[in-house]
Image 1: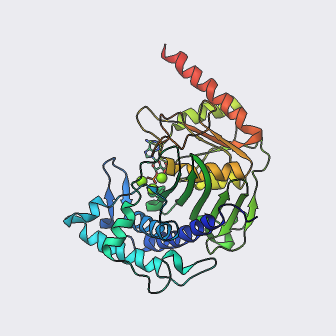
Image 2: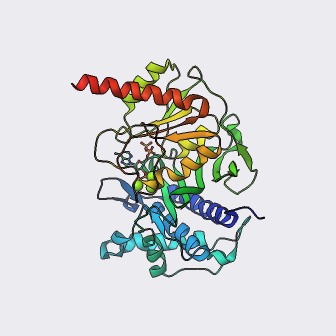
Image 3: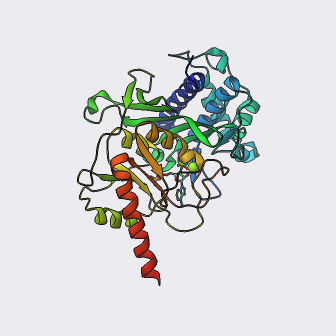
Length: 353
Ligand SMILES: Nc1ncnc2c1ncn2[C@@H]1O[C@H](COP(=O)(O)OS(=O)(=O)O)[C@@H](OP(=O)(O)O)[C@H]1O
Ligand SMILES: [Mg+2]
Ligand SMILES: [Mg+2]
Ligand SMILES: [Mg+2]
């Protein structure tokens, strides 16, 4: 019997690879007027839009019936004021889509020389990411650039795709163009893809799709642990992490890094635990910010829960629902971190009364 989700995995890797190369080349050419500020004050660049167009186009050709939950939408680009940006995005997306076929690519996925798309097709591809999500059936998630602020700083960011079926993540692929292939050997350069398929384990590849290496979170204790956490203070409560570290007797300083590269580093044994607690009420975590990371950690032998110890629920729509935070770690330390988080939360509640 053939393995489940083989084509889905190949398509997702091909899409992430093309989109990752696109974003890396955009960074070198990015000029200030190619970044917009969204309604929630967060940045979005020509790279985010073009990468979502590329991934969505490939998914549509390979799996025409599957809906997509994507972070970006094309409404600003359809306005007259967005014309210049739209032209640039269409050119970038077409450049990436028409690149020569590489390892594992298939021309039936809408890629390869001669497969240019029209302006309307590119805008429609971006807007195909408008699915509202839900608890039944198949859907893809796209975060074309996760950690856009890290991308703009020239630091870590990630191109993230997942397949969810009946609220369970089945395939996750994370491209990290700026992450070292081997942190112990920086001379090997940067550019990594992490991939995981439910029940089939997790692997790291180079950005060109070579050197598949199995991933298994190595053993860890509080004595060797350093928290992986967000860079932006608005995205998670860093002072809370400090208290949790103190309760656990952790002495190593935290590793701050943008994007789902944090999940990738965790499964490679860098850090030991990823802790992301809400800064306040109101913000709901997006499913595309955690679905690929969740399956990667689980398939590398780790555990991902919220601060109640509950699994993340990918069946509630575009968000994870009320924000109880995220704790991801290997099996040997997850329960210790969870216990310390709950203790720190209880302290906060006591301090308030
Ligand atoms: N208030 C708040 N709380 C929690 N999360 C938020 C919040 N606001 C935004 N976001 C989402 O954070 C995504 C980036 O997360 P990171 O861990 O990369 O943050 S950081 O850049 O390292 O600070 C970022 O993803 P991208 O927009 O894809 O960059 C957002 O979806
Ligand atoms: Mg964003
Ligand atoms: Mg994101
Ligand atoms: Mg994003």
